[in-house]
Length: 151
Image (cartoon, rainbow, N blue to C red; front, top):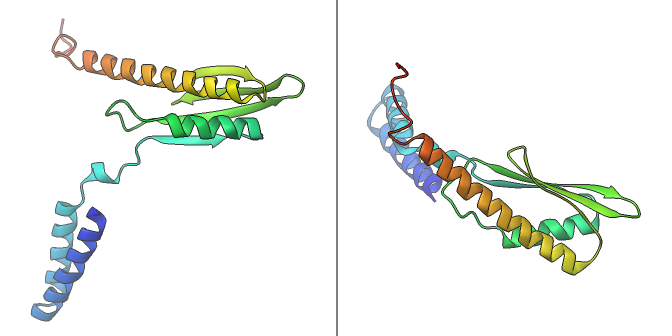
């Protein structure tokens, strides 16, 4: 929504500037508006969930996990990766990573109930991990932990 507003404002001001003044004033107006209108935090890509599954069992797990998942915190700069390693005769091995931290690594058979239970369990673990991570970050930024570095 904000990008559309920026583009429409940009077009209107550029048309007005072209009719009233030369191209030099147009360039300065564009630079000023662009630096004021675009907030770098709006351009960040927040949480990402990557699918690296191969089989139907892995795809079913990923879809269930993705449908249940919602970010419980204000943390926006993390990624979740769902990986799969097929194991003939055993089933498949599902691995879920949050920013390269191995959260869950579990063998699973092609049983819908087991897939659903593992997806719900994994969402709970991911939620708990992110909440704990946020608490630790808040503690590290508290007044007790900050200082000049001089003993």
